[in-house]
Amino acid sequence: MPRQNGYHVAILGATGAVGEQMLKMLDLVKFPISQLTLLSSARSSGKQVEFQGNTYTVQEAKPESFEGVDIALFSAGGSISKQFAKEATDRGAIVIDNTSAFRMDPDVPLVVPEVNADDLHNHNGIIANPNCSTIQMVVVLEPLRQQLGLQRVVVSTYQAVSGAGQAAIDELTTQSTQMLNGEEPVANVLPVKGADKHHPIAFNALPQIDVFQENGFTFEEMKMINETKKILHLPLLPVAATCVRLPIVTGHSESVTVHLSQAATREQVKAILEEGPGITVQDQPEEQVYPTPLASVGHPDVFVGRIRQDMDDPQVFHMWVVSDNLLKGAAYNSVQIAQELIKRELV
Ligand code: NAP
Ligand code: 3JN
Picture 1 (tube, protein in one colour):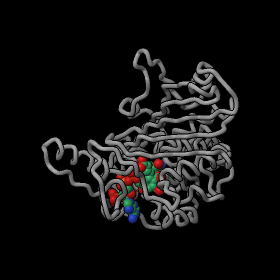
Picture 2 (tube, helix red, strand yellow):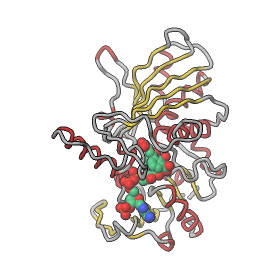
Picture 3 (tube, helix red, strand yellow):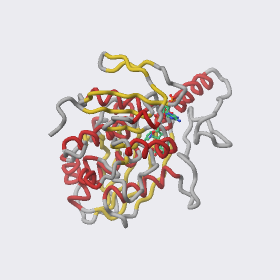
């Protein structure tokens, strides 16, 4: 039975781009909250945050901060998750972690509720929320996997700067003004915080998200490849990804090419996607109806359009997949996981 008086929820990283949206999503779904604890670094400690008519004071995260917490939503970066996850679970909290710290750990379920909610039953205190680019793609792949089978996936992403946090949003704004004023853009954050060299993102496209691996793929690309296989329970599925950052504030877009296990028609694929949970099909190209990142902002769904059969292979389909990276890609997916835990009496 869900608890009548609700749950003690903590947000670690409450003052960040994702943390802010977590609060909005908890409010949107009317999450049953008995107590709310907002945590950050010492920098934001003491900051006041409004939620559902009450004012909360953000506190610096400490191990004791998780005393009595039922559900801890983590979104402060991988090293902070590693520092605090055990502190939280030892105190009885279930951690829903938005970072890559535990995603590929075989003991940690990696969950997109529309795809693999049953994996939640295997949790040992920590549940991982996948990378935003992975989430919106697997929501679309799963109904195709179920009905037509998957043989291969090739994706190119067009990612917004909010995926790289508040500092990247600020950098795009500042650089855009600088360039429109004819000044030299100052780059400090992208493509990777703390790198030796930075590139301007304003009026640009950066074919690097996160750090390069020895195989020439970036870590973001490897996250998409490895996480997709884990979530779909298809360890041998060939997946190739190219991840690109664009000067868009919010809304990730993806050009996805899916090789199905059998031939299908465009109408069949469209009908399957229209029935898919969490998907909104926007596909009337003759009327200029297709998803765009700007229109996706503030909506929890994954949008799909431009569905086309390949010119040479009737088993291959191309499509355009868009979602608000801070919502379904991060905050909303985490809150959905928390709702599923309650529904399945796992908390
Ligand atoms: P952000 O805007 O930079 O916010 C970072 C948050 O973490 C702030 O609340 C910050 O608090 C807090 N923080 C930083 N250092 C901390 C520390 N030592 N102890 C406690 N809190 C600390 O970043 P964001 O975009 O919200 O992303 C945060 C993390 O979420 C990322 O690093 C990533 O791991 C994950 N993320 C996941 C996805 C996804 O694809 N699912 C998407 C985006 C982000 P202060 O205000 O005190 O600095
Ligand atoms: O860049 C994006 O659009 C998504 C970025 C997500 C991100 C940013 C910093 C660290 C992650 C993530 O969730 O994969 C991480 C991380 O935890 O590795």
